[in-house]
Amino acid sequence: MHKYIWSWSDEDGVYTNCDDSLEEILSAVLSCYFEHALISTNENIYSIAISDDEVDFQQFQISQDPADIASFLENIASSLGRPDKFDIQQIATDL
Image (cartoon, rainbow, N blue to C red; front, side, top):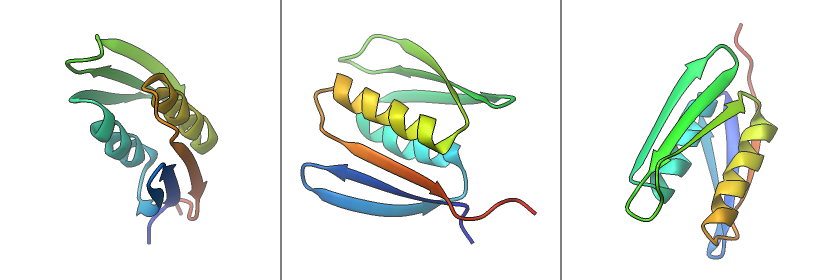
């Protein structure tokens, strides 16, 4: 069973996905936006480094909270001129 269900809407439609971790969600989305995205974990914080031909190296830190990650991804999309929206829901917990 997957731990998260998440939706990504853009100008073409709405896409629903399932993943086992928030890091997998971040990686899936950021790899669509940037050539290079490195995600590392430190306690309850993700450190994210991104770059590509159009965006200089940028570094971010974000909490490992579904709502914070959805907001972060929307802000990244907006900075790229994209209307994308995200929703992430936890559907299972670790036992």
